[in-house]
Image (tube, rainbow, N blue to C red; front, side, top):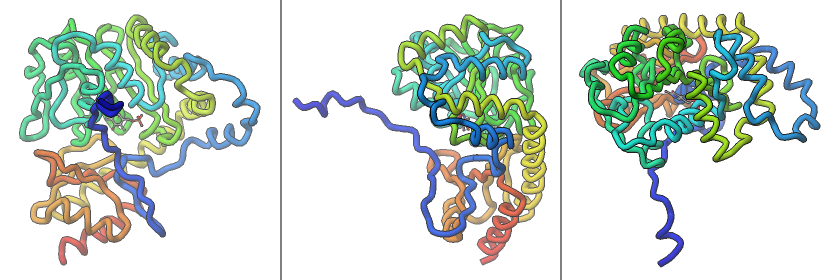
Length: 352
Ligand SMILES: *Cc1c(COP(=O)(O)O)cnc(C)c1O
């Protein structure tokens, strides 16, 4: 017997690599935003005093909740704020999935869901997407302890309309339905408008993608006051001071600058639409993306070989060695210049 026998056995989530190579790189492997955060964030960082860090932060991230409430037309009590949406989603799993029936999510989706289910010993069932990587809402009409849907889905990029989410909620009135909207700001329609009608809905969003703040770790959930207070209770049974003070106040600045937010999202959407045409001309096919990435497969060249070829030229994209998707690449949308460099290299690789 050794302490080693008591170690919890886990298979962790593997994040996209943060490459450490010499020289200039084009990093399109973790769906980060190529543009800087809102200018007000810079200004406030400069004004922050060292002594501001002396005190514990507000446990409920009140200033940020208030700002978010104004932005989304809800009340403070409808917001849970956490250290990236990963933290928010993990807390939601821990809070809402304490039953015995399996929690349902697609077989191809954000690969953290099954990791949390395993960690928290939550029973779960993966429901296969169809051949076009689409979700069939009827597949979820089975006894379940909750449902998790990323909309738009990752890594496919496919966005379902609001009517689809509503149908899922209608068919599962006794289940908590989490809608992970990490990419909703790139052209999808948020389920926020359904919150007044369905108290079993929890909408989760992040500052990491559309607000360019992955490094600050800010995520939030929107739900009924009752659902949110259940999450707060679980969080406060684990760590009261999750979100640090700089993230709370800098997050407020980012939300205030709606014009900059819109402008950068629109730039990314425009680059994405242009990238679709370029990739199609190079022989790639992909599901219709409403995100800041394109999930593409090539008609002749293997995804792994393309990824390796790009990597040699310091261009990083994501390849998943997983069933059904191992011949696909998830290419984040960078600046127009970065994308042009990628297309130039792809042209070489494919015609070699
Ligand atoms: C990026 C991402 C997240 C997590 O983002 P955070 O940086 O933790 O806020 C959650 N869900 C999906 C589908 C994502 O792609």
